[in-house]
Structures are given as structure tokens and as C-alpha cells.
Amino acid sequence: MTYLVKTVSAAILVLSSTALSAQAETYLCKFKDHGRNNVIPKQVLVNVQSAGTAEIIDPFLIHMKQPPKKADFVSDTSKLLRARWTIDRMEFSGGSRLDLKISLVHRKARNKAFVTIQVVGADNTDQGTGSCGLQS
Image 1: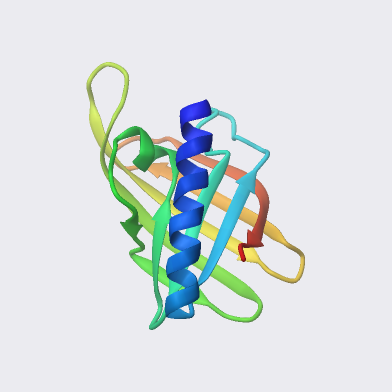
Image 2: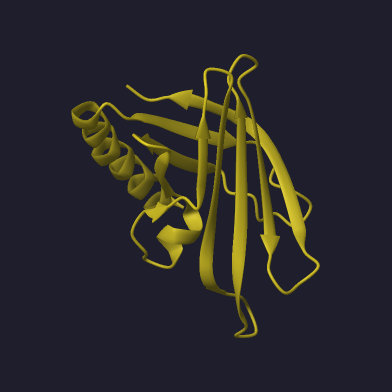
């Protein structure tokens, strides 16, 4: 767990410095509800860049030692931030490798965040709630 906290902290520092130079916004989303299967991450970092793009860092990517993931879909308005991304071939216990489709919605006025994780090829979908903060 300490490794995860240090890695996310380092990622925040790197992405925040990138955000300052490119006029991007970086959100740190923290989830206190970890879902019924306990797979909802404690933290997700979303670095929203220009032209509807974003880079994501989450504990799944860190565990798999993958670089930040480019979001498949991003919508960032004054009221709502939405991002979707896919973790390719996540390894599960038993050796199976399945894709994870992750969707994040941040309602800015209420500072509420919702994340949904779907395991492609399985009936498992999990949801969690939390909040996001704009990093400076």
C-alpha cells in the first residue's frame, strides 16, 4: 500500500507540472465506497488535456506497471467531467486475462464522483462513489 501511495503521489507531481505547462487540469478522485467486490480503487488521477483528451493513472495500471492510459472518451464541461478508459488484459487470480472498462463521472457543483468498472466477458460490474479535487 505504501508503494501505491508513493507512486500516486509521484504521478500527481509529474502530471501537475505537465498540467501547468500545457494549461491542463488534473483531478485527483478519491473513492470511499469500494463496491460490493472491493475492486473500486481508492484513488484515480485524471489529467484533462486540450482537445478532449485525458491521461489516467489508477491502481490497476500501477499494479501492472503500465504508463498512464489515454482515455477512450473525455467530456469536460463546467458542470461535469466524464472519462472512460480500458485496462487491457488485466490478470485475475486463476490466470485469466480480461479487459476492464472503467467509467468515471464527476459532478463538479456537488463534488460527487461515481466510478463503474465492468469486467468484459463476465457478469461483474461494480460501482463506487467519492469526490474529486482539482490539483494545483
